[in-house]
Length: 156
Figure 1 (cartoon, rainbow, N blue to C red):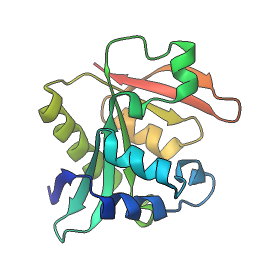
Figure 2 (figure 1 turned 60 degrees about the vertical axis):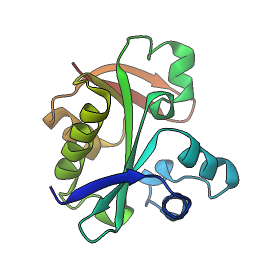
Figure 3 (figure 1 turned 45 degrees about the vertical axis):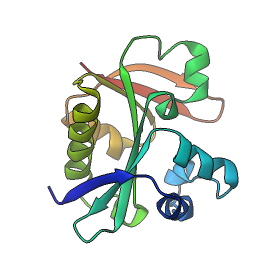
């Protein structure tokens, strides 16, 4: 695959904070502030570059991939590795997701020596849910944070 991973840097993190998704996917926009920058740098976030060295996405694992409302409701109690992903907005909806996500799964699997994962996705995000289902994830739990409904999906 034409992707490589690298440690998150300040420059890469600042690029991610500039990414803006169109509604309804703007839920995934991050605040361009110091707190968001520090999270990308201090938590387990990994950048994904294409063969030209361009930042095209990122992934995170553990608590960083969990939605706080789900933590309070206990949806993450099962011992699985949580993962989260983000892709360059201009690349979304263009059929690139499966290759990107497969690369991410392989990278995380190699880093953590596991094939069992959980992810959380907004219920409205049919594109992502279809991708995750096609790569072996099944829906598990649903919960709300008051403004959006989320679904956890597992691959075990």
